[in-house]
Length: 265
Image (cartoon, rainbow, N blue to C red):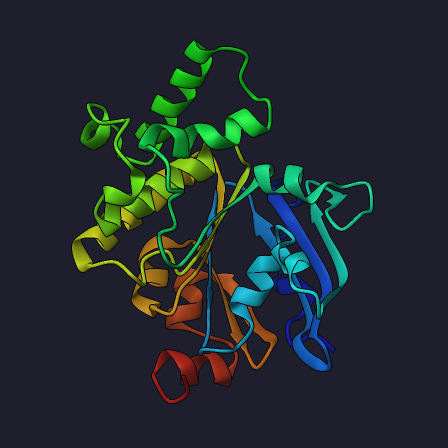
């Protein structure tokens, strides 16, 4: 049985962006995710926390079918985006990933210009009809990623020449350029210095006006700062899920309390 009662899930179904139900993930014979059910709300930052190897990144990768790229991985259960099953055979994973964007742990700009990094997604998905439309999308995306003012005079320069924090914001601009509805972030600040981390955290707060943001973080302080909802994973189970303030100040499960107070982790 799932560790969490349904009463602790989101109540107002109008707010639910992603509904996961009884999700299991296997890597060969290893049972990595065990019966996870969770409702992820729209225009909300949801943090996944828990010790290394607890399944939080594996579960995140289920939400845009990134686990499809791993031969030995098998996903069971239902994941609905706006009520539609993302694992339905009719769903094209490439189109799904335009809707559910992803930013990885290590900044990974393409070996292209700053402009082409952002323009890539809208071009391959046929989202723009002209160069002027593409210019608008690139500028708007860089503005959303709080990077436009720093790079507007050198859009032809290689994205790989930016600082680490700027590269990560470029990757965020690239992810938002396809007008996704959900933005997944897998430890987006772990390779960044404290100043760049603060900039990305501020950006995450702004992004939730337009997106549902799901962030995996090993930093409980970061989860407390940026998220409104927090899910605690342990040994492949979703132990507890609720409002961030409640999870951090008054957790219901002793395992959550042990993790937050540093006794496990």
